[in-house]
Length: 162
Image (cartoon, rainbow, N blue to C red; front, top):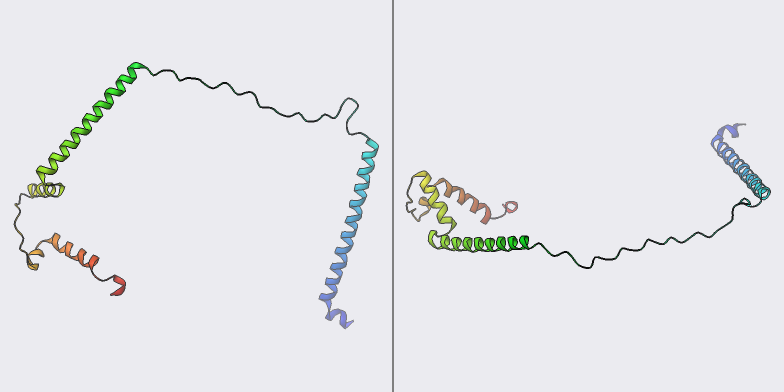
């Protein structure tokens, strides 16, 4: 009796295995019985189709015929074609005029940098003075100090190697 209480887990597993085997066997017998009953019913019914029905092969589906393709497009309206030609000529004239203006501005004004410098001097009312070439003269302006710091960061050693 002590052996049964000591090995209760093993006995429970054996009992579960036996129960599952019995259930599978009864399920198989029930499935076999249902299959035999279905076969008997089919034999009793006889033919699947009634006397008024006959077996016919499925018909092949054929797509409807394609409409004939359009042979030619209608000719464009003459007034619209003339307007398009006039618009194209006008755009070409404007493009050529813009090119000439850009060339003239580049030659006379010295480029965008010179134009920007002139605009800032007009706003502040100052005249451009020559900056001394030394380091002291360069660092007198706040913008030049900023530029020097940025150049040091860009041209100096990488931050990871400092």
